[in-house]
Length: 500
Image (cartoon, rainbow, N blue to C red; front, side, top):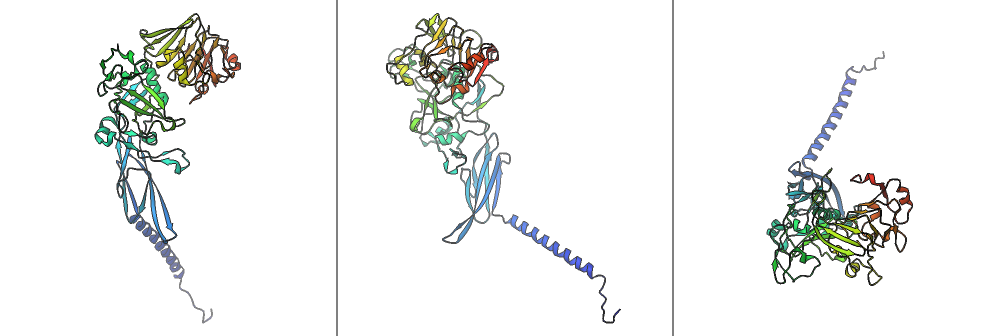
């Protein structure tokens, strides 16, 4: 070994390894410290009250102002309710009741999302569960006409009648359309047209009286109002005063909450979910026994109505009044051509006789749904028909005979019917079951040779939603026949819900 060669200590390699380990450890500790400091000083803390009431999602964004060269951080918080809860608003750094909420983060921001249990009184009617009181919840969400375009989201409004909170406690809140579409807390939902029509199919004649509360409705004086059918509520003596109250047979307890500034005591107005069509109201009036509806064309509905939320009851069929037990009472009968038309208390209409029903032809060719009611001898349209049975012996169903029967869900047509007149079932948008016992498809007398002139396509496509039930071995004939082949659902009679 050379004299000037130095011998390195054996421990130098271990020292170098030790220093490397120390460096890594210090870096790791520094990162942990930064994380702890960052967690401790993060500018937003969100609490949920109660913990199982819902959830909150947070999106943080940073914005810059090119003119002032300032920058700031904002948070967008969205509260989502758990089933059975309603969001009641924020507390802490904001007291807003709106979600999503946008808030600027300045130092330490603490927010609490508050929820409450939603336990309204309810009642089962048919195969649905209805709230037995009007909704009194301030909607926090916005209704979006296009889920992919936030610029088309509108925060709806709700009110108390006459801006008095006591009226909200008694009658519930009044909602505009955008608020109504998002107001019902899960698992409740805003009722559709078919939900409302089901009440009439279950209630039958005088459904409105069965839904009205026993108190709270104004009296009415016979002769003060003019509406077809209302005088049949009682033996009406001119000048007599009658109560507008109902029997509340179903426990629905409908109160006359009116609109924002008037009609309390005289009317109750409720929204229907018609998101694919024009908005719609269902309403009760103090001097009638009907549950009626109206479409909101060109803003006709104004802006506010009450809400009754609803739930489906799986596995339960829609039980219709008069579907079992003794036959329901006959309300009225009419002679119509070679047939007799009879209206029953459960809303069913039966047509009997031997020969043709009379056709209904308005005086002018340009037809409207009201023209036939005014100029044709078909008074059953003044009633709310729930179902129709044509009896054996009738050979023709008259043109426009049942046009406008929008509650009617089922029709039974016997073997003897060989033809059906023009627009016989126009506007019957609730039709779901059409039973035909003739193996030879009845001739449809239409102007244009297609089913749309019998089962008028308005607001809903009846041929897509209704099912045609025909005799065994005749499906092929119906699928080939003009006027019937447009139906998407054609089955044999054995497959009907009744199996007959």
